[in-house]
Every structure is written in C-alpha cells, then in structure tokens.
Length: 90
Image (cartoon, rainbow, N blue to C red; front, side):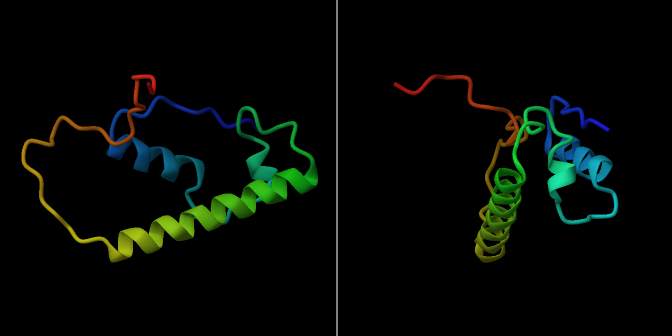
C-alpha cells in the first residue's frame, strides 16, 4: 500500500497525519519506508541507512525539545511551522 503525503497547514494537521500513518506508533521499517513516494527504488542497504538516519534525527530533535526553554511569543497565532519557506536563498 502506497502512503499519500498530504499538504499540512498546521501543527494539528501534522499530528493528525502522523496518527493516521502510524496509529500504533511502530518504528519505521524498510518496508514502510518504501510505501512513501520517491522511496520505492531504494536498495535494502540504502533503505536501512535512511531508516537509521531518520531514527537518529528524531532522537536529536527529541533531545533538543526536551532541553528547550519555553519562551512565549506574542502574535504568533498566524505562524505555521509546517509551511515551507517559499523564498529562494540569495
């Protein structure tokens, strides 16, 4: 079964998408990775490296978030952290 990537417009959309594609919160496998668009062609070795890299990245993010100091910002209700930057680097 192929996984369809949706256009995420908010953090709530991101959380709902994560819940929908992995409701049991199982670790990413090579087989699951290959269900995502653009990942079908990876060799076993390449796919395993991608899975390990994603796992390591998730651990780094978790560690950073766990150590983060919460700083409330005013007027940020219009900011979506999931929207890509549309401006090209100069």
